[in-house]
Image 1 (cartoon, helix red, strand yellow):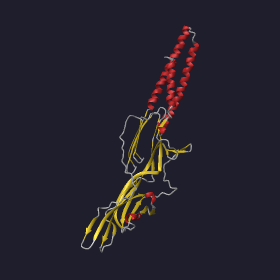
Image 2 (image 1 turned 180 degrees about the horizontal axis):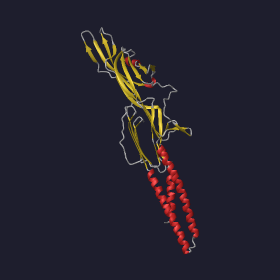
Image 3 (image 1 turned 60 degrees about the vertical axis):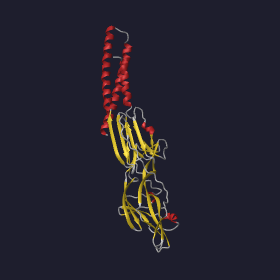
Image 4 (image 1 turned 45 degrees about the horizontal axis):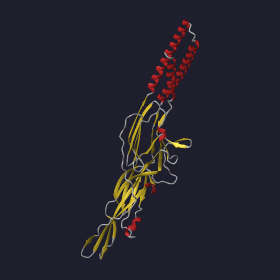
Length: 379
């Protein structure tokens, strides 16, 4: 057996075992601490309230002019980015020596919130979803009917329909706890009087919100429950943050009367979680996740892992056998040299020294490998 081949084989196993600590990971940091990478926001829910007022103007009539709500209120949830929860994915952590990230796919919607992610260490590709999220437009517009007139024998009544749109941010409401339920009221509607030439509407519109937690945000309330790690004065997690949806019940009232009860799942729960993901050397992992376009909640999760440590153990076993064979061949060469009185004793001694050192290196690496396998079993 060629002595150089034995040394190469042993050195190869030394390098492979020495790389066990290398890893590839999805590392996320708060936006304020870094701006290098893929920026995204957790979503939050706002509501678009649409009220259609019916304005009746009378001429020579006994009935007074009126501005009333005669059509059902429309309350639509909107998904918007939460500026209090802005993060950056550090893409440099996806690249590590001898760890190949074969596929990394991140899908965001048009408001900068993640809808799906694929991170794979193999050739499989899973489907990802793209969601269309309605972007709120904070405007109030007037839609006037074309001068429709109701006539009777004594008077003329002109009817107009005036549409008022308001965007409601739950964080701007004041939630108060009543037993185990938090309650807030939205009644900031009468600012629309400018649309009625300064006349107050006859009907007062209120929305009553009920939830299991408060969504009011104070200046010192970040509601950040992510278990951050800290290194070099920087906070990070090796995974992807997301929030659990929260339930909100809404009662719409017109002039004190309940007109509609509605239930919604919203995005800004205080329960922030994260999906951990990292792939170490000799480990093949895949993570795929999908998130609801309406609440940001996790709707689908797939995770698979396999280990190639057994292949490494086989390589070391093969290297050990080759080393023993090399020692036997060296002994035979020395015996033949002594019989033939060959004058290459120094070369043989040097080869024997190299083999002994290689055997020592291999035994050390086998011990490291055993410790690593034991650690994986304990984990």
